[in-house]
Image 1: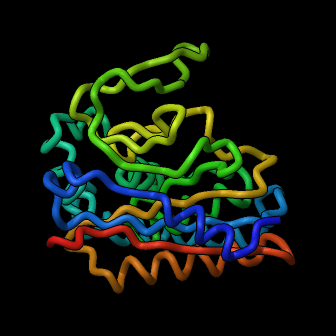
Image 2: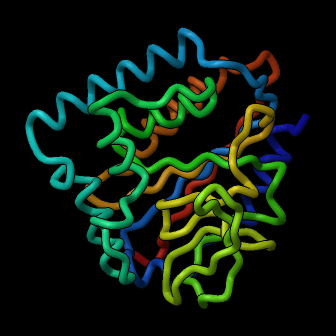
Image 3: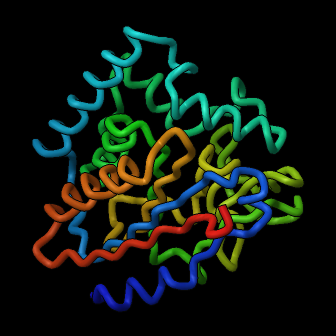
Length: 241
């Protein structure tokens, strides 16, 4: 079982490359590490959050198109800035918000929680199995040679991101392509995950207060997943902004 101090020490080595801030000086990442998770099937708490998320999405989309929702629009602009086409590769927030119209998936209580928080707070939110990481997470712009394991036509394959693409990774390879588009298989959450890393991605117009509120709600929900939960968080931001 990792202590809060051990989780904080791990997060202290996480970093964002300057060229990412050159692309979007307003970018912030809030990292939340959690240990002591007791895996379990979807339950009443996660179901309540999912229903709230679906209602929130329905109300938002009744007022404006999904691509015009403020934070989704900001991420579409960010994708264009590094050469991605947002209508073809949707950021995770947009993909989930669109899916919420017809019902979010019920996977397990851990995945259900972070999907629901993402939609409720309108923030891209990635979840990873921290025990599968090799070294600390870092956000960079790709050279085009990094390894990314994914699935195509039911088969596991190895891909490489496009040069200049914004990627999360560790010492072994890419953990998430196109900032928050697609996560790799190696570090994906599973039904046996006990230690996890969550990445909350923010651009303007999302405020620091709104980012913190999303993390607070996520932390509160995670605290119910076991009697010995330990958590640590760290905000990565552009100090030169």
